[in-house]
Structure formats: structure tokens, C-alpha cells
Image (cartoon, rainbow, N blue to C red; front, top):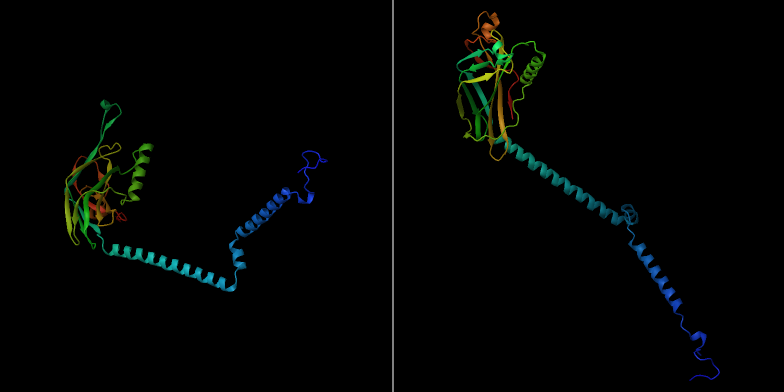
Length: 293
């Protein structure tokens, strides 16, 4: 009920009974801020060193024991893995094939046909050739397991002038080819050839028919050449997945040449005459030219 002396709309409630909502809201915000600060301090991540400094002696000893146990476990596991691989390698070494080429025989004669040149060829020449006879190659499995995909008919031939011919460009090419032969690296990566198997202790001989090799440079009548023959046998081992090879490099030598020095008459010479005449010859292994992969 309103008093007639009061102005309309004024409240008669005393000041002490009026609500103080702004102060309450401010206090609530302050409390929440303090709580969040406390939580942030609690959630603050500590470094390992801080954890270590705060831990008591018993906790530290427990951590040290756990660390030593982990390191010991990793060491034992590493030793186990290393021993496992060592045993596998030893088993493979003791149970794998190993093929060697026991000998390669040059059976017939060779004939060097010189290059043909003349005015009618306008400065060009017809490539000369060296014909060589049949070859027998024998290889044997001296390993402890059967060899698979055995292929003994992997070979290369190289015919080069025995001395420089006077053309710097061609002589450089000849020198590079000779260095390749001297620095023999025959066990290069091979493709996998399909072939038969070769049992342990078994020896096999293959017969290769006569062939012909051309000259990369001009060779005239009466010049001398050298003939190198590289032969390889490739094979695989069961469960290996790799292609293995054994290779040898031979030089064709002859004593069937007139007016040879006494030493060459007994031992033979690798300097072959290009005289369009058939000569007998034999293969001689080049020192340091055997490889096994």
C-alpha cells in the first residue's frame, strides 16, 4: 500500500535490503580465476630432472632398477637376433653349391683374316675377323648342395691389335680395352638363366662350336693381334634367390709361328699373326683373372 506523500514509482525498501548483484558476480569471477590458476599450476608438466629431484630415495632406486632391466632386456634381444643371423649364414655357407671351371680346352685351329681396303672402298675398309675352332669347357660342383639353373655357355671374346696403329683416337680405344682386360672383373651381375641342376661332386663338359670375332679397328696383312676369351658359369642355390657365377679369362697362345724366340717356342706366345693362315693354339689362364661370386 503506497503512502500519499511519496512520489509515484519510488521504492520504500531500505538501502541495506537492496540486492548487490554486481559485487556477487565480481566475487564469483575472482573465485573462478583463482581456481583456474590453481588447476594450471597443478597441470603444469614437469621435466624428467624435476621429477627426479622431487622423488625420494626409494622411488629413485625403483626407477634405476626398471631402467637397468629394460637395457638388459634389449641387450639380450639384440644378442639373440645377432646369433640367429650368424647361424643362418653359417648354415648357408655349409649347405650351398660351389661350381668351379676345371679347364677350358681350345680344340682346333684359328685363322686371322685381315681387313680389306682399297681405292674402290673410298677410304673405308671391310672388317677383318678371327675364326676360332671348337671349345670344350668342364665345370664341377664342389659344394655341399645341388646347384640349380646351371648355364656354362656365358662367354665373351675380344680381338685387339698387339701394338698401336698410329691413329690416336683408335689407339686410345685399344688402350682402354686392354686396361679392361688387365683389370679383369668378370663376376659382374648376371641375369638368371634357366638351366639344369648339378649334383654335389658331379662334373660336366659342354661343347661349344667354332666361332668368329671381328676387329673394332683396321688390321692389315702381317699385323699381329691378341685374342682373349672370357667364360663364366652361372647357377643358383636353393632358397638363396641370387645368381652366382664363376668366371675365368684366357689368352689364346700359339707356338705354331716361324722364327719364334726360344722361350716362345717352348711356352708359346699370345702375339698372333694376322696372315690368313690356320695355326694351332691353346688357352692359357691370365694370371689373377679368376673370380667367384
